[in-house]
Image (cartoon, rainbow, N blue to C red):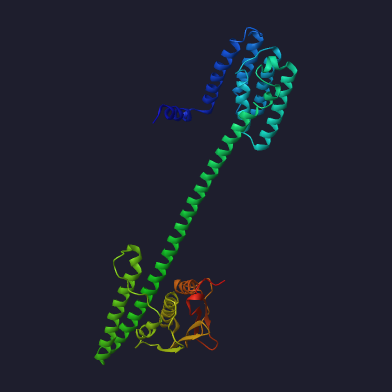
Length: 396
């Protein structure tokens, strides 16, 4: 760090009042020397000269609070020196500092007005006292230009500070936006993982409960049925472990570990077989080719059917249920209907996590879902999803 950098760092650590007093001290030194060493051919410094200097220095202490008033006082003192017969290169230093403060602490309109008034006043004083006194080296018109220099400098500094503040504000807003976006993504990922865990655990426990009940009932009279049911329980447990591992992989995110593909339409028959042997007879009906269905849509169909069948087995009291998957005109219609006793339809905004999860999955896949009681008994869940990648966005 250079000596100048160290000095600048110390200046930045000073309080505004200390800086103002330091500026007054510097201005007093240079202006006082100039007033004291006046040209012998002109009026020498006397009590009136020092009075004007004292007034200017006292006014400069308040340049931050009242910059325009300080500029008027120091400008009047500078004009007083000229009219009194003093000349000097630094007698206008107090008003230069004041004009700089007007520009740096104001706005462009005030700078323009102040510049116009100061320039005209300086030119008028020059014309009044004559070139020999005010500006021996040049014309009076030059006196109209020097007040514009500190104003332009102050305008440049103020504009630069405004740009820095704007850049800092933009950076802060960008950081806040990044934090909000990161929080939103974390929340969405947590919801997605919670939805996957609910679907896997709820379905697996229900299927295992059904098969365990079948095995318990057939244990003594039909051992082969019991063994088959227990095998289903074992397979359901293995499948649940695989799906849980695939779901939780995103929390570890090992790049070199293979992840099992998410279930889709091709595994609907396997899904329905898990409920085989229970109290509910389930039929699968397909229409149209399932090829080319986006993976997100296939997963949504699988989870919606999974949750709907879990609810049928656990809550409906039905004896039969039908799962229909129909592809027509670029849309995929999925329907799960049971013949259970009439029951009140759940609220669209209520219900358990399963119904909420079905709505979220359908919306995420760009589709819609509705559910409710069927006239005459039973319950129906019906979802409509895009069957091609081009229509997989969010629907309004």
